[in-house]
Image 1 (tube, rainbow, N blue to C red):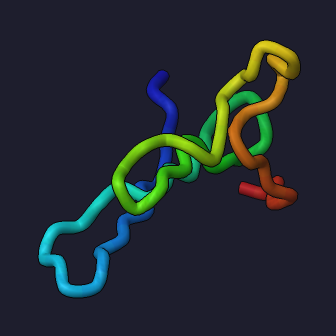
Image 2 (image 1 turned 30 degrees about the vertical axis):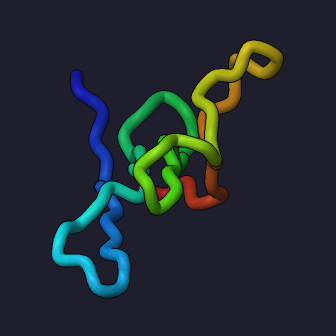
Length: 67
């Protein structure tokens, strides 16, 4: 089954194109979480999914557990 998620888009002032800012993952075996979280240039700089020292963590997880 493919994960369900919301894409969060942003548009810089004076620009016409929309950029992916973050994904909010909602249908997983873990808590809902944000990953990747990008800077205005589109680089993934603010989150890691399953970092080497904390493989059980996903991006920025939230406390909203009800579906």
